[in-house]
Image 1 (cartoon, helix red, strand yellow):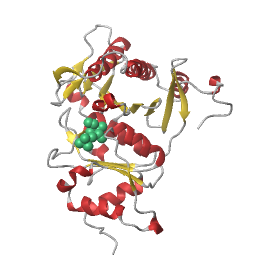
Image 2 (cartoon, protein in one colour):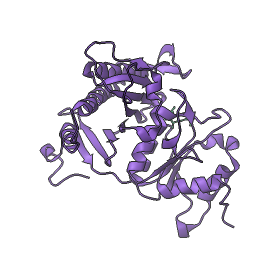
Image 3 (tube, helix red, strand yellow):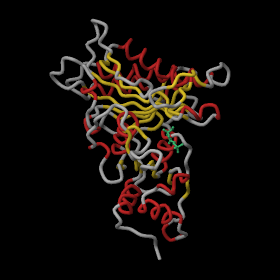
Amino acid sequence: MQPEGKLEEIGAFKTLEQFIIERQFTVESSTGAFSRLLRDISVAAKLVNWHMRRAGIVDVFGSTGEINVQGEVQAVMDALAHKEFVRALRRGGECCLIGSEEHSEAIPMRTADDNEGKYIVLLDPLDGSSNIEVNVSVGTIFSIYQLPEGVKEVTLDAALQPGILQVGAGYVVYGSSTILVYTTGDGVNGFTLDPSIGEFLLTHPDIRTPEDGNMYSVNEGNYESFDIGLKKHIKWMQQERADDGRPLSTRYIGSFVADFHRNLLKGGLYMYPATHKSPEGKLRLMYEANPLAYIVEQAGGLASTGSQRILEVKPTKLHQRIAVYIGSRKMVETAEAFLRGERDLDP
Ligand code: P6P
């Protein structure tokens, strides 16, 4: 989707920086700090994109040999992406605390005397990084909270806020192109990176997700460990009922951001339920589920644990996991109905 003019008229597109400043002036009390924080995040995204686009050339594949807090072999790119975001946020001075998938503890940023940062950033620097070596899209996910009023000592407790209190959230998908999608509570907008001028350009204004869809994303290899309601739901989606568009199509890339982005634009449902291997679910509440839940709700969709709105879950740990059913409103509602035992297969 592009404004009037042809693609080569790059000047026809609004840049992310222009968009951020425009939105800043709609908030009377704005000091510009939040705009600068968003700029710092976009700078880090450009740097990660630069590393990603060289991954096939420079030896950034493989592992660092380090085992991160997730118990997974840490990809070189995970470490690079984490470093770029921490460095950009430290340099920007607007962030007082970072929680990252790549770091077991929260990272205080007010080490420098001049850091009066009042924003907390929770981050999955590179989700799905095991896909890099096979050239499958991967992504960054970020969530932003304000430091609660009156908090003097910035600790992890200040970050453990329910998702409904986020002041911003977004993701970057490093795919056939690099797209940054974010919300600050006033709709969802997407920006495509034009590497020739190093700018994110507004290519997806005011994203609204379709209220229904014909694609679902789930790892059916875990079928045996699914709740009976979910097993029925999956079989229901596979029933041949042309009158209501079934069977649906399965699209599961193994990269949450990529699956989420496709479903956001086209309509669809992504599910990562509790399994025998991941009894609390696999995805992380603070820096995967919450930010994408904020985005999908702002775009007209829903995000559920299967029984509760994700944004209302009260967090207790930085790296806590949660079950996720996220996407088109009608599809999430159907999943919840099956899980409650209110739906069954068609005769
Ligand atoms: P599984 C990647 O590791 C990730 O966190 C998500 O990006 C992805 O959707 C999911 O896990 C894939 O997990 O167990 O299906 O391989």
